Length: 213
Ligand code: G3P
Image (cartoon, rainbow, N blue to C red; front, side, top):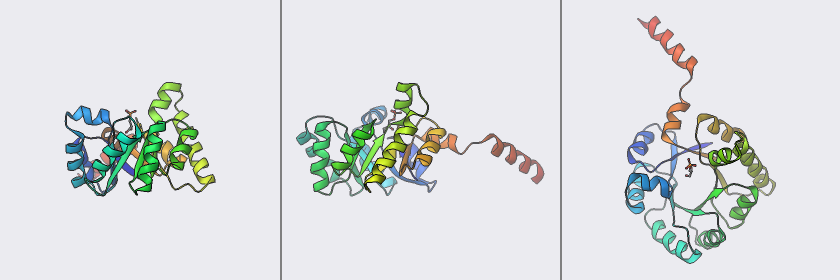
């Protein structure tokens, strides 16, 4: 399973790029707004830091407007992936963009039915949201089951659309993503730092440090 970083913060992306394990970046309007910068300016910086798929989200609206914005973003760099919301207009836009060979990531996916619509439109990626589904259902396994079900449905038809596990809140979500067969997990910076921690690792390090003295 590949790791993408889910942030628009350039310092976080720069640091994460030095780890050698992050192969792409996803952003969304909330993450861009948090940085107080324009989408286009942030994306221009990100493509210099990570040589892999960089998701940039278009503003929700009629398909024609989203396609036009997508063409503008796609021109910035060959690694740009157009992130499109899960609406009928979004699906229409994905169909057009896929015919033009522009990679897409259909976001805000909460059901197998939605994932099938994205796949049939030719989406390169689909992004099921684990954390938001778990929160909404108050079930810590709801996102996990959704991922498993999308994996089964896609495998039934050898669908090439890649599954990006998104809305990841903690390391357990990353483990669930891997066990359910997600192709990619897009992970916030702070969750990466939590993933490397384990109390027994810390205890073991201390024992080795003491021994080394
Ligand atoms: O990039 C989309 C997604 O990961 C959002 O996460 O935490 O806002 O639900 P969150």
